[in-house]
Length: 130
Image (tube, rainbow, N blue to C red; front, side):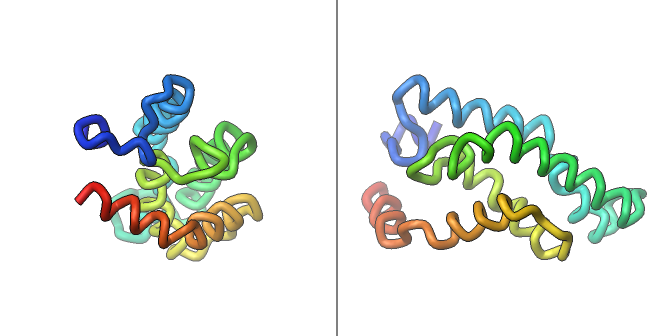
């Protein structure tokens, strides 16, 4: 809604193909978030899974994410820019990274790419809508 209302094309394109990739990830995210962050919830005491079980579930969810999204693109829904799909995932991925599990090379590269993303351009993009 906010992207549409404020014409935030950088975050959520009006191009149907580009938008569909974002929508596809958001749907995946909503279906798999419990698996993707199980290790975080285990560390916080919100699940009865052992550490090993939670780690296995999280790694399986992340592998699925890699195969469906990051094997085809640099970011979750684009090769050239982060979108609201990445923002939805990054909030949770930061928690997963803080749990210290061994992540794949591709996921570590994704993290590095997002962290080193054009911060000036990103800041300008955000400021232009405020």
